[in-house]
Length: 306
Image 1 (tube, rainbow, N blue to C red):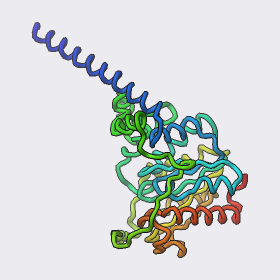
Image 2: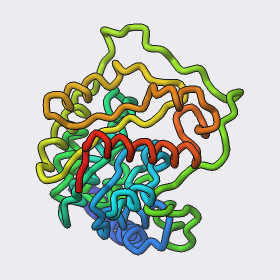
Image 3: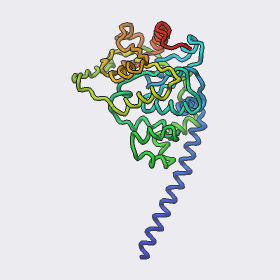
Image 4: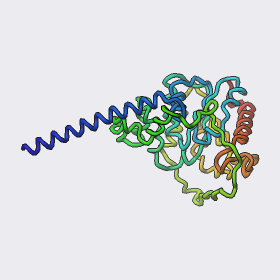
């Protein structure tokens, strides 16, 4: 019995020490995140806690690099901010929009679609990464829809900083990444076709699989913002794109009368090296040209009117 008491005492001490480390170190990292002086962390804080712009752009790295928010602001005579983030899809972006909605509802959301992050199956845990520091009731459902055990994991402050602690520390002490102009971060230079990896072609056209969770969040996005005009856009791709990859999104847009603007196979851009940094991303020249063309389409088709 004495040995059992000693074991339990040691176990309690271990958990007490672990809890103390979690609280102290986790709180320190979250403090650094909240008070970041620049970089991705500060940019995320600004989007979630400070933006009040009428037009917001969401999507992956193709959003952050393709949409010149200043050009949109000037042309639409209202403020626009680019909220895109590298490697993030609808699960993250839906959560980000829910966090913005706590403060205000933008008039227009432009969402750049990339099938691999927005519609096709992959590891959905990755999309929670930048939502963890902002975990609250508005995004709780998202975490549990990806992994029902997330509600227990999120009890740990260190877990909320998992894989981001270096971002938080560097962005608090000495930020090395720029926030961009109104969130827009263009790429310089032209692409080197010698470095292009041949794109895989989907041979099984009928058997292509889509992620039901991702598709459900596109439906939720359409339902949750009745006072916000939503425009879905597929920005240019050097390779072009098999449009079957966006079939679920096209169906949702048709059913709900939501505009879908598809530049993926636009001959002006497909295979045109001067507009691209690599096969998936426009360079600064291409981004400005695409933004100009998108604004022209939106105005001509009267898709969005302020």
